Amino acid sequence: MSKYKTHNDRFDRKFTLHVYNDEDAKKIINSSFIQDVVLVQEIFKRPVYVSFVNENINIGIETYEQFFDPSLNNEIGLEQVERVYAEIVNCLMVVDIIDEFNQGGKRMYNQDQLEI
Image 1 (cartoon, helix red, strand yellow):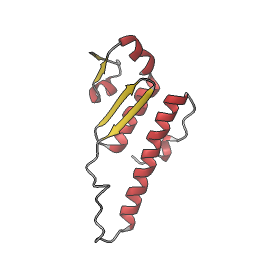
Image 2 (cartoon, rainbow, N blue to C red; image 1 turned 90 degrees about the horizontal axis):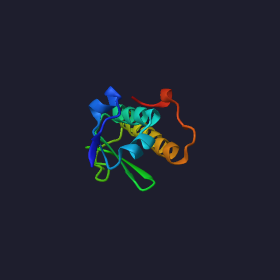
Image 3 (cartoon, rainbow, N blue to C red; image 1 turned 180 degrees about the horizontal axis):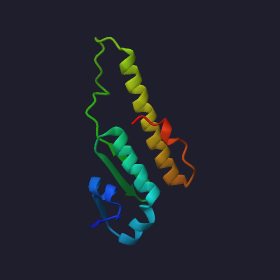
Image 4 (tube, rainbow, N blue to C red; image 1 turned 90 degrees about the vertical axis):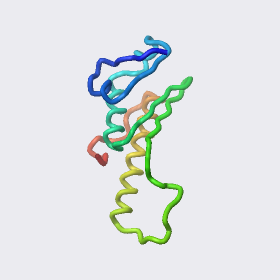
């Protein structure tokens, strides 16, 4: 396994790529994909992990939220609902990126719709 540089300074500063085969990496990691991964990291403002296994892409976004251990004693305000809604919209954008990659289809979201 070797380190791979995309020659996109913005991407290479934020991410480290480890590949088994440089030629395969060139086929998979195109400018559209690089743009999308940087966008995901900027939207979530958290570490993003991407792996390719066989014909699948996996994207992980580190979080410090306690999604599976909510406090049921506190009231839920509009601000919390809006934050959760924005998080869901952003997660759906990531799903669209994965779908676009897997299907070669058109992007289902508009960049102005994203919560940054």
